[in-house]
Amino acid sequence: MKIVTTKLLVLIACVLLTACGAGNSSTSTATTSTMGGTISGLTSGALVLQNNSTDALTIVANANSSTFVFATPMVIGATYSVTVGTQPTGFICSVTNGSGTVVSSIVTSVVVTCVANWIGTKQLGVATKKYYWCIGSYRC
Image 1 (tube, one colour):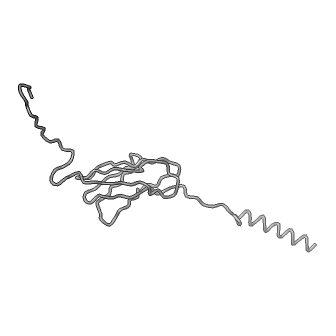
Image 2 (image 1 turned 120 degrees about the horizontal axis):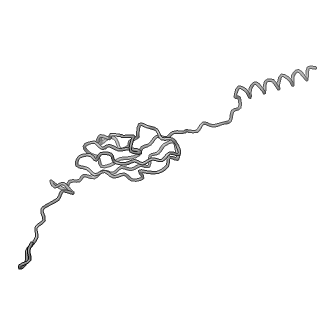
Image 3 (image 1 turned 45 degrees about the horizontal axis):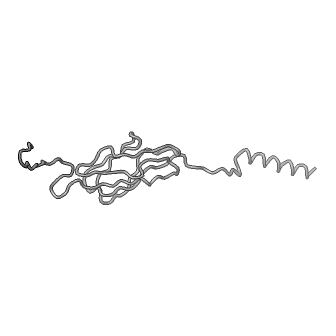
């Protein structure tokens, strides 16, 4: 009788421990990801980046910071598209590796590069006067 009672108690203990989750071998996986990357060349002004045309992030020039992270986390498996929303005054910024699918809990592959659009005292992209030479009787 003692053996049957012991076996019954062991069986009850196993059932209770299983019901309580003891021995649970499931692992927790991240379902969201932080979205960001690196930035270089922005020495003054402010740049606005957008993720999927909605999540806006303003980056103010700061010599101590070369990384950025959007405030809104992304769901793993979702697509992202990081673009320049507003260019900073005096700079042209471009995005590399700005689109893709979130596959891990941390995305840091987006690269933003800014270059000054000034040479000396002249702004690039500003139209200049064109001068034509008129030769002979051709009308200019």
